[in-house]
Length: 74
Image (cartoon, rainbow, N blue to C red; front, side, top):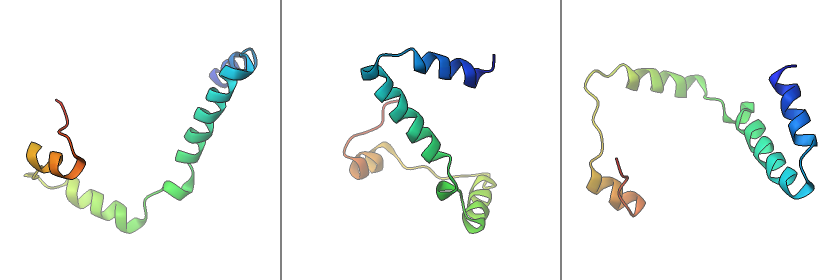
């Protein structure tokens, strides 16, 4: 039995109130994998350029807090 078959069997055995959340999660996953969210050639080139930077700069905790309203914890 494949993982997909196991998932379908698992999902089919769920009560309706639990199945709704599984369906919503699966729907969100499928949407996130659609071509709508693929990078353009220009975006891929920019990512490659930034990853190749041997001395990247990062925002400090104060900048992050100012932008997002609270600092990220480590």
